[in-house]
Length: 107
Image (cartoon, rainbow, N blue to C red; front, side, top):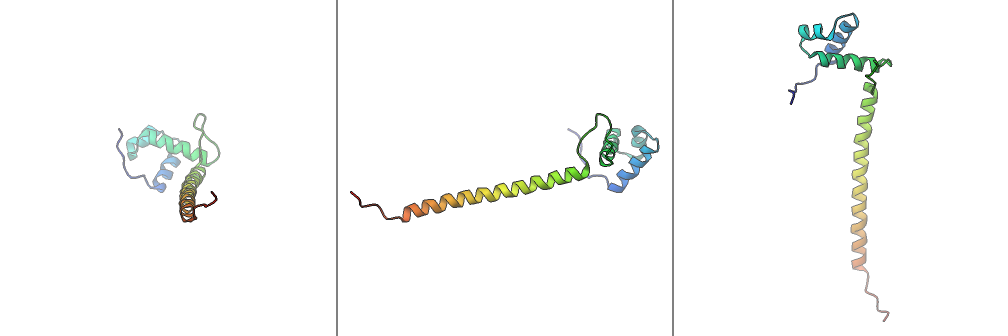
């Protein structure tokens, strides 16, 4: 399993991407600045998606779309929890109502 570390600051990532756009390779930048070449390649691909020009074979969601997806998933989870609470409350009140009804004497 790979090691984890805190994310690199956005300004640092942007500077690395700009150096790559200026012609430096991810391997060169990796040796000089520390992030792996694959990490830098990922940043370059994400930057291209964010600009609306995804690299061939590197299609995916832009940062804005990914943030929206995360927000919508969080909201869906909340709505599902609220629905589950209402279903349980409805069942509880229905059961309580059935217990308080007088038994029928129509024999």
